[in-house]
Image (cartoon, rainbow, N blue to C red; front, side, top):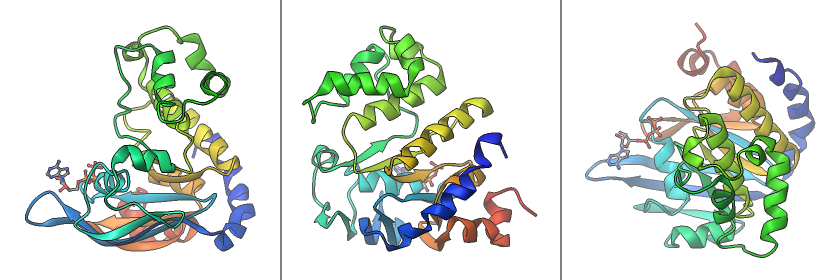
Length: 256
Ligand code: ATP
């Protein structure tokens, strides 16, 4: 385990009080698909205020479909999604962003022809007040982006593009940040930096739902976790419980 994770376990213990926090994001009986057969089967999931939840599962389990459904980019067939008690089903993606549920999509999806600065500014499209002060906050949080400020985003490294995608999402003033495979394709040292960024957000009480194939790292940081298999939740529990489950460890954590 990278050095950066060692202190996280203590932090997690201190956060066990979160078990009493209010549910901020709730998913109930969510079923959806792309054709004849559903890809998600009656998924139930809760994320409490200030909590970090990891969503694990093999390729094709339905994690991205769930993230896209939460974001209004894919329509549920059945079931409900609420954010702070407001029902999201039927709302358009930009209405969902405005309410505070913001996705950092798989593959970053920055605008490659625009500068770093313009990519960050675009994140404030729906929340323009105070924009430049918040841009400055992002450049303090991600100093590498300040160095690249006037370069085209397409010229950044994968790690820098990931930080840019997170900065852009934070400009939308999220109440819950959804992260879909942020470490995908990044070098180990950059993954360590990325998880340090996520740890800092957690320390600031940002509510996070994280999909990542680096399951051991995600569980080292998360409060709770869900495991999806073939579109259904097959395990849920504290991150420590999920990490200690021998069958899950074998499937997702490289255990034996
Ligand atoms: P990965 O880690 O590989 O992205 P995942 O857990 O995120 O996997 P999804 O991408 O949600 O899984 O895919 C779930 C299932 O839905 C897979 O069988 C996939 O082939 C199918 N699927 C995903 N997107 C589409 C689409 N646009 N059209 C048809 N089927 C799709």
